[in-house]
Length: 120
Image (cartoon, rainbow, N blue to C red; front, side, top):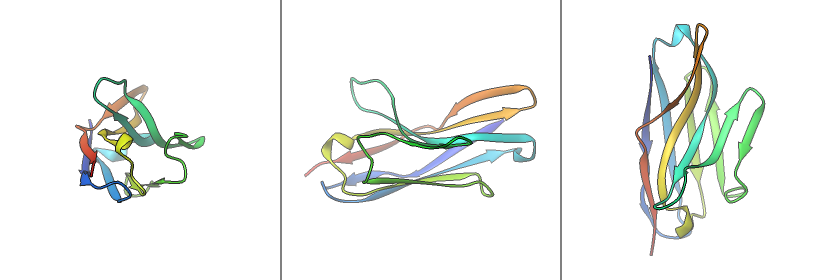
């Protein structure tokens, strides 16, 4: 079993910054983390990719390029999302995600979500 614990998020004015952190926990000795990253879901919209770091590299949504930075620590099984110059359209619930393999089983796992609100 792998759990994702998120921290960060909150309320910020446009142009402000926030940092989200996510840590994977469980029996990590038997788990292979294939990728870790962040998705978000705004009210009435589908969940969308924000940024992910995987074996193939880093994938960042065009809407946040130049403003958001993702960093992953493979040794600690953590992933952070530094969000700068936030805009009202960044308001959403942000979810940590990992694709993890245990033995022959690969699973797509999600954190509980953390609210980010950008408003003046």
